[in-house]
Image (cartoon, rainbow, N blue to C red):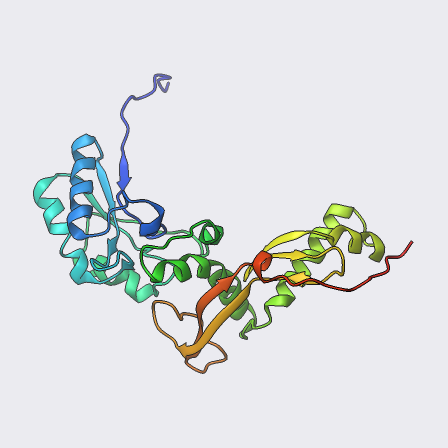
Length: 265
């Protein structure tokens, strides 16, 4: 008969820096190899049995899969602790499978993480809450997470590019209005959309009640070559995509209207 007494033993894993958050989100986020090593050693001394490790570019703190950077971190932790070294294979949403596996295959560590499922998590709304960015790469890194989810998902399913973002907004607003009104009658649905806000691919959009014009963020972008920093979504197999230079929120780009729309009675 199994004992009902619970074990008091626990295994603590500490993920020291990860790859989701950016330097502007916290001054305490470890960025350099020295900071990552010190935090890992401190965690082990405090009782962590496992340290889960990502690496970051020492110059600007962006996540990197570079084995050379990992080699500036892992041996020093091994020298100073007996904690189990757990190397990420999740990396970040910006890394290819080959990049994410590069260091684990080289090191052959005791443990690796394994993400069961797609790499489609996103914290893109955070980008609208931060007004001062410490490094230029951060804003597009966070805001672009939603693009990767929708655009790459569409491409994988239909083998085509999703280039008309308004189509997504229109369908999503329609679905929300049907749900909110509990009806499929055009009048009920149209009225439900008034002043409705939606977190769309290109940011927060709003259906202006006075004339049913969708108010969207205004993006200023440059047609640029694909790279691994700020132009990561290729358009139509050209090797180029759009680099976002500035995003003006819909509330700031909205202009007055003289429309006198008549509503059905």
